[in-house]
Picture 1 (cartoon, rainbow, N blue to C red):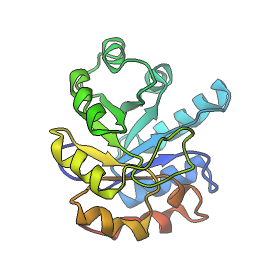
Picture 2: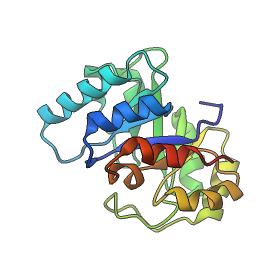
Picture 3: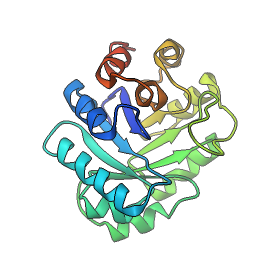
Picture 4: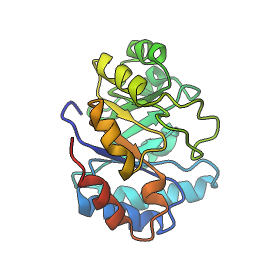
Length: 204
């Protein structure tokens, strides 16, 4: 993940459907695709995860599961993303000890980003950059300058997250934030491919 990759897409209740969005992500060359399903029954999460795994398998799009190690293992995902209040990343690595799996960790402050190094994640999520209603209890917005400070200070690849859309990308790039996570800008789009292309056409 050391090479900047730009868009990191999280899928949560996409209006166009999970499979359509995953196919669009693969078609457009999105590097990382994360499945975040919090309230659905386990059997539905498994069904969707299996479908997305098949769509992304053998492509340049890495499939990451949010906050569910058992599900990530069950479908042989490419990685797992955990939050500050989720299970221990170190424990997850021990249980899922397969070479090449990617482990990400959310951070919400300079102190958390620094402390995160103790768990040796492969990348950090940094945010929320802007106010967002997508995630419950997301916390106060960091702002672009503070997010940039955190990201520049970390030796790990970082992904900015929280309220990001195409209109806000120039302000991120001005702080040398190269990787950004998007949720609503694609999940609320009737044509996910067009939405993804709109985001990916912006360059630092």
